[in-house]
Image (cartoon, helix red, strand yellow):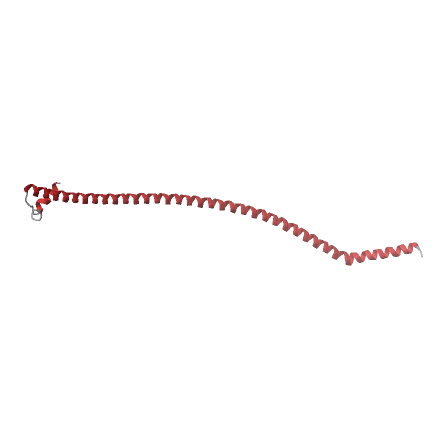
Length: 156
């Protein structure tokens, strides 16, 4: 066999093999590579979008936390203010109740003083009648002289 004919035959077979590969194997292979390239690009783009969305979400979460802290501080301030108002109201009510109790006690004391004075007057008038009857050595009729005894009690 001739070396040239072998080389030409092998070259023709190689070119046919290359043509066959270019026609039937290369397009699906390139399509698979392009699809893989698109998938990777889409994945990277989605990762970038996810990263941006995560940053935005973190910022929103920080803002929400900050707002919640401000709202909580306002609620605490209002609660403290209301507690102070309630304490002041309780003090005012306590003072009013104390004044009412003191007034009632003074009125009761005045009544007791008046009762004691009346009892004392009655006792003094009884002593005066007893003393007068001993002085006069005769019995004074308390019922008959009630008006006289009342005027004596009023003078005492």
